[in-house]
Structures are given as C-alpha cells and as structure tokens.
Length: 115
Image (cartoon, rainbow, N blue to C red; front, top):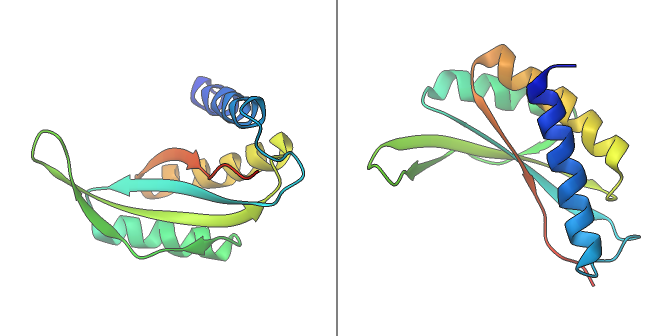
C-alpha cells in the first residue's frame, strides 16, 4: 500500500471517529462528498466521467480563487453511505485511482453531522 493511500485511510478513520465522538448518528445514511481539483478542464472532465461510471453522482465543475490569487477547477463526486470505514476506503481506492489516471488532485471527502 502506498504512503498516500495509507494517509487517506487514516484520514477516513479520523473523520469517522470525530463525527461519531461528536454524537453524529452511527446508523444514519450520509451524503458523502468526495472532492477533486485541477487546473485543466479536459482532465477534470474525464475524471468526472470516470467517477460517474463508478457509481458516483457528479456535480458541475466550479472555478475557485485560491489565497494566492490563482484559480483552480473543482467538482464533487457524491454518494450515499453509512459511516462504514470499509466502504469509505473502497471509495478512496476507486477515486484516488481515477485522480491519478487523469492527473487531477483527489482532496478527500466531507459530510454533514446527522443527529
């Protein structure tokens, strides 16, 4: 396992642990938003197509201004999941592979607290 993949697995576990420790519902189904970014629209679009083919709902690309004044394009790939670490790690495997294939940046995931 690569160091990068291991770090994402650790991120997944830490995020799930933090949500549950804060009292988020362990039995709820969450809308998980996986984040991608890049500076080339064509590569980002190809990554979005592959994420869609892998079963994720893909949002429109947006342009964001960075702190240094530069810009980056980004999109979210979403899916409904329980806070199950095995499922989240499998998603990470799939989406990191897509990001690497298209030379875009995989930027982890987020979700909302559910009581």
